[in-house]
Image (cartoon, rainbow, N blue to C red; front, side):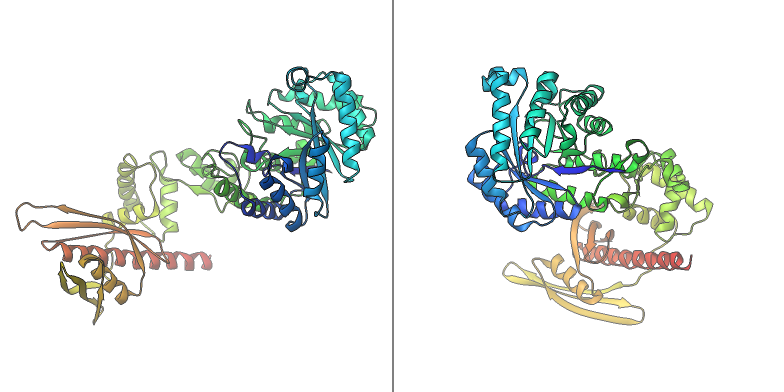
Length: 515
């Protein structure tokens, strides 16, 4: 099978996304991850654009090993010289020269005739070859260029020494059948086309960047230029992860492969998103938050019976982790009971039906039901939480000018355990003392106090949510006429739930090992 060269321009075209400016440190970090991903070429920037861009390209060229390091240049002496200096420290440098060839660009932007463009393109490639053996040329806005003129330019730059000729759909104007035809025309009508790699660079203004790139591959392109998460000018570029996985999954049709380590895709996507500040949409193909999440009951039932009924690739193949069945109002009993089994619950059919009804009622109120919600449902409806610890006594010393102190006694089995602590307030001091006894370190996520009776001696109920450093999130409740005591009871209740959840997971793990 032919191997498609993956040319990543996240650091150049991707950085041109409004608000996506990257500093040198971030560029190097992304470039190193792109090398781990296995891209063939990294376009590190546009060196003449600014001193910062020059320094970034130079640093990437110096520090990143493996891929070719490329810089972009217009077809001018200053641009090419600057680009050559920026990439020269790379073991595999490339100079990428571009010049527009469409009538609209020649007339209104460049104000040059076809003959002038032809001479300038040929000169620029020859000049760049004086600094670097690996020169790429792009006729900007190729998809809107006259095809005969485009072919003459391509022939001239290959004759001048261009090893790669890139055909860009600069404004995302082409549709797949048209763009595929364009690539076939260039490949068949340019007499020396076999002496250069034919590349494509597709923008996504009509949402066709990936489709056009694949159409180009079908018609002879051997390099695709793309970005992580599809970021870039306007609506962005063709998405690297989508192109790569389309090639992987539909190898039967596309008859090609890449050098990409697909298990690094999700990690690379997260890094680029974090450093550019551009959030990946949840339904983004391959790397979106929902790419391997299923909520509909019919889909969940199919997935549980045979994963490939609703998934054409494994989430692990792109470094995503595992398939997630999202429990919500569309979920069915099959997914619900399977999740309970994973949490360590072996319930009778009667108890499952009882818990499922409670689950459905809750799902109408919440977008997603989490494992902690399921634990609470089962605990409230089916079983009682064993009391690992029970509050025996509580002594608080507090005042306006006194650091609050709490002494707590908890009973564990037949033993009474006692610890003291100070805190920002009496409740905080109390919780820290409990942590000392239990050996847990928990973060208080939510705290609420409600009166469940009336009067000055009203019974108060405290509801809390905590997260253990090594454990999940749980809720706890406690009631008393003393709000400090109610707070302590709620915390102990949450701690008991943590220990219970831990024991259920351990039991479930043992069963899995036995199987």
